[in-house]
Length: 78
Image (cartoon, rainbow, N blue to C red; front, side, top):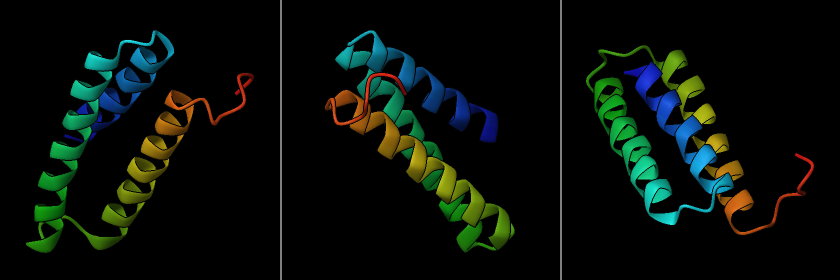
């Protein structure tokens, strides 16, 4: 599940660079839906809290970086 989450984040950044909005939206929805499942696992105590916190930080930073790049708020050299 974690590899699928990271794969969706990576593909979202790829499609943002290619300016393919529809594909980027689909990958972002994949990230969000996988994260919701992981949230439910953490709430049910099936996923340890430290790992969930790290996953949350990675997902949040990945989405923030992707959206800043999509809206041209990120420096092009990054």
